[in-house]
Image 1 (cartoon, rainbow, N blue to C red):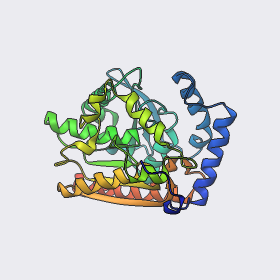
Image 2 (cartoon, rainbow, N blue to C red; image 1 turned 90 degrees about the horizontal axis):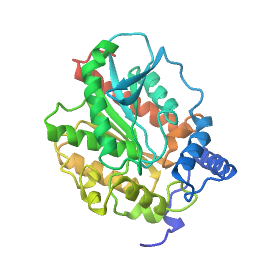
Image 3 (cartoon, rainbow, N blue to C red; image 1 turned 45 degrees about the horizontal axis):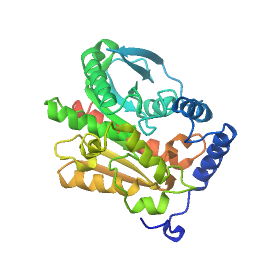
Length: 324
């Protein structure tokens, strides 16, 4: 693999650079290391992200739910029946993070799009490897479709979305639904997703510091997610290998300075070539996880606003243009 050439790497957005510096300081102060036991890594990750998940919009209702054994969190921005839904899957390399680390992000989507958001707390690898998380998400979605009306939700207008590993699981969930003959969901919101275990050109540009997702780290995430190397060729693990026909409309939020950028461009292009409705946005100077910087970064807020407007359009179209 070629080495990183800084002359080819795009400059960082100043707000995102400040975000990365603060994250680095907080991780160092807590002794974060990839060599720590996973339980300690998770605890540090939750602690470091506390400052970024606090604040933000207040909800009319936040409710914990049990979907046949899978923990969900429902955010409702307004007390109004028949809200469409974004089913959100947090990232973290299939091994880290939770609906706690992503709570503000979910509330932001709820408030900006004026829709309900349901977050899923799926089981993490390496203790629970593929296909456990995907199966839990399928269970939770089936429960939501069955019980959502009683919760005041419009089960005919459900979008799915996530960031990083959560975007991967979003696409894979739609592939699994198609294989089972289930009705397609309304839309896919895909934030800087992990779709291809094979390195691409953006690995060479953005796979080392100061960029937050490094080559060895990404490789470890893929390896920790699966039980054996053969699983990395399964399209439900690596959507880059999938037949992408007949999937829901997709919004790709791509961070320019991300190790995963090129695989995002490639998947968006293949999805469009397969006849899919694709909206692609590149956020210049943004890195992996840049949406977490919403409290200080204009570019993160711009991305949230664009995706929320897109969600409203897609979800309203599902029900004869009715406003949510």
